Image (cartoon, rainbow, N blue to C red; front, side):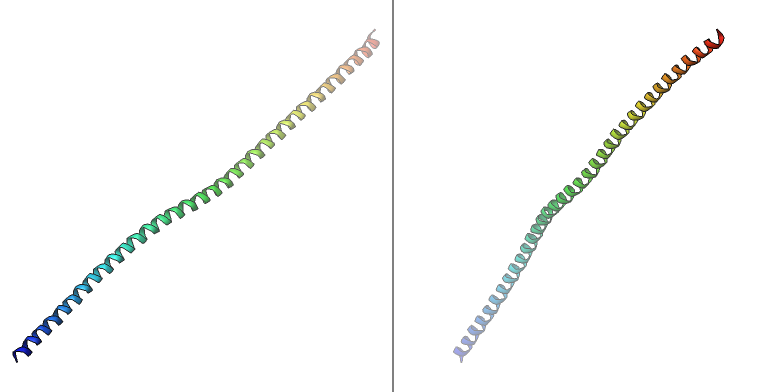
Length: 127
């Protein structure tokens, strides 16, 4: 009977030790899983931040370039049109001034001729 009791105690001890070993392994696995989950979360967060920063930089560069091209094109078109308007206006003013000057010269010449004719006529009547 003593032998059976010793065998039973040893068997129970082995079973308890096995159960404790399983519990320790479960805890170890749970810690490893938690650590792996945390490492994965941190790593993924860092990768996401880096990726988003890079994507944002590229997108912002493309948007900025497109906007600057549009703005520059519009401004240059406005400047060119203003320059054309100024040249056209300057040419128009020059042409008007030339016409007025020529017209004034014509009228001045015509008036001088008429004055000469009037003098000649008046001298005819007065003498």
